[in-house]
Length: 294
Image (cartoon, rainbow, N blue to C red; front, side, top):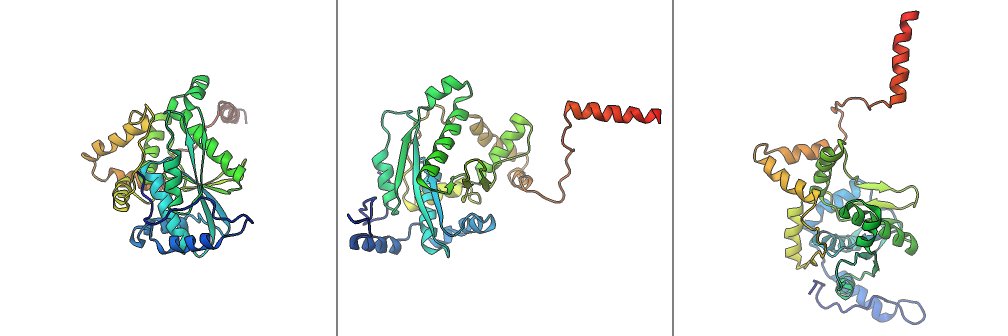
């Protein structure tokens, strides 16, 4: 059973046979407008992210990456609420990748969940395990890569210009730490990413929410996340980072806040220059020793 606002038995196609809004559909929209999906006091962080990072523009068509987990369900509910009051119009719909980990894909449940907010739901199968066997990367990397690719492709196909992901603040900090540990890079994902090849823009409106907040809000709203069928769930490098931070915080109580601060570009940042290539180093050596001849 997945939460949907009470009293909303909604068809995903609100048009009559002529292609125009039917009287019933207009009435249905009025019912949805009168429902409160997420109380206003829980939306301050979402409004801040949308405004600070300029995530919205008039006429945007935003496709939400809906996995059925707690984060993407809350994002769907919150954006549907924001849509009713934002000073600029924008469209929303949801898309789910069926990674084919399980014989049962909850298509009907996801469609019902989205319909409760007046949103159309799309889905598509991607055989992640088969693709992983052919590529040789870790299964988690392969899964994430092809989920993103499928979502971006569907967004372009349907005429959406933006894709919304449900990454929260903990995700950003854990990614920052993971990149430092595994690749020696000080970076995490950005609030807004423009994809030059496809012309799509990726937005992450939940970046100011802590994971614990989303869990609590999900319970308050009656959201019932779907179980993740992935056999690797809870056994990933990201999970290791998630577990490491609380352990380190016992010795360094401000660690999380300091990691979050380090993700920001600040005037006080003091890092070594970018490492030169071998060709650049050869040129520097030649230039240095050439001074002896002068």
